[in-house]
Length: 574
Image (cartoon, rainbow, N blue to C red; front, side, top):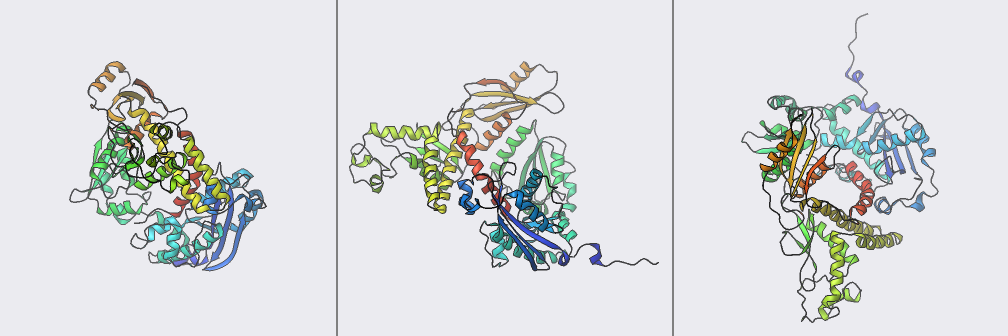
């Protein structure tokens, strides 16, 4: 029998023949091992026609955190009579059987489904998965949509359904987005399911054509620079293996639209070899802050930070400033924006009745008190309602909250949030949530930074690859020297020599004065990594016993779901 040439459709499954189940989950948080599903919504479609829908609330088996109720609108009262996941999961698995799963940031939703299957003894779904976030980044440009959030894409494709953080509603909106993206993918000659899945990960022609740029890069730790034909630095990165890292930019593994765009412009790759991985990480931060490459998103403007200052006036107040001064004032920060600093200030005012007026107030000042006095939120020192000694009690409370114990602020704002949630004033509660998070996270960060930036010198070592030790000298939170001590070398002369050649660093005002906060945090992460040994510490390295770190853990847990939700909605496009 003569061979018969197959048609193009026989090379794959035409998209018009594929049954998609577009689904969305609501959960109590972002970690499948700790959190639970509260709602499932799914829509089954084929060839643009809706074949069926699946929607149910789910009893998570425990209380829904107030932070999550504020985000989704799903409360404990709504799920008290809902079925548990053990009853819902078999029906959902039957609904999706034989279909291709679609979700917006599919990794989030599929992780929860797989975790539920593992807990209840079901095999994980083997369905093909399509992520509309990845597909949007491939077929749309930043000129068309600024980001890949579900709400943004739904508006772009003129979906009649507005996403609202409820499962079925969001799944319906995702259906419209999927159809719009498939239509766009058709212009790239994508007509089958197999082509659709490989299309997202395929390297661009520019990536394939410029693979030779990695040939001269060595296998060593260091920093690399992508430059255009004029020598302008486009992007700076670091790696413990420069050759492998640079090569990855020219493969299908690199899918970030802005980086693929950068590869199309790049003309050469330069590199700087470093002694250790930590030195490479620190050098990268310093170089990005200096060169400010246009394709780097993070760390470009370390100087653009603000601080919350407790002034040194007769009747101190909280002021947002951009400069640390050696004036004896108490500072909280750094904040990345004035808005974050103002959020922290409002949170602190909720717990401590400091004056909020900006006019100077002295012992001789006499003027009518504002409405805050009538509300019991200020003692009115401006009209003599409080003496400097009485007002000093509030000042000391604010100073302790900023530097030692954030409990009064946490308790005061949490009580207000609870009250607002009971009254179903979720929008206001979410504003207070963000204010509390800004204060607690920044206070915890500053306390960690201050613990090391007040040390004149710290020397530490970690095992080096292949034997020996990576040795680092840190002065006032700044990396002053790095070196690799080979196996069998006597440590004392090596460490003494490294200290003698280390950068001289002078102390200064505030919690971060010798290096950027990001650099000091890099050093702290390395110090806390497994295998690191302290060689020498000058001064006292300690954290407050009742510091903000213990409250930060609760804040981070509550925000984990919100962060996951933002990620699943997509990062900016090209």
